[in-house]
Length: 182
Image (cartoon, rainbow, N blue to C red; front, side):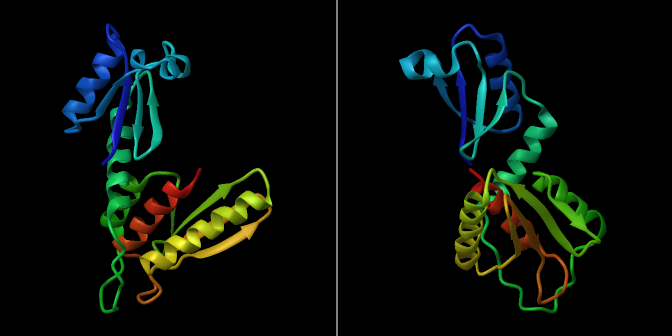
């Protein structure tokens, strides 16, 4: 998993961030913002800044419970969707709740049947471009969500049609879709 910590020397919050990441079993790539003028301009005294999977996750202080969820979600996004051949039970109860918690990202589990999330954009063109990125990902993964495209919005609904319920692969696809968001 790709974790980058932007920090600087003699920064108390940076030291705390390093310790929290260490305690979570994460060894980030540490970048001293003093090492390059463009980094100094970008971050000035606004450190620590932590990126997980290419996205900014934290500035200044780390929320440990949010960090754990982000790590679980980033980890999930690294998995490959496994095609369901049927005959397996749909996820329910505590197992479903645990996966939803790990996924985070405001995905909703609807009636223990499917995942759903609405993404918002500034116009139709951005929403359409995002829809097309999801389509390419779905083809690559062999796992196809239901998509509803509207002006400035894309609603994504994911479930395993073969069993009319959810499997781990539905959460994997959701984590991958979250990574597509610019």
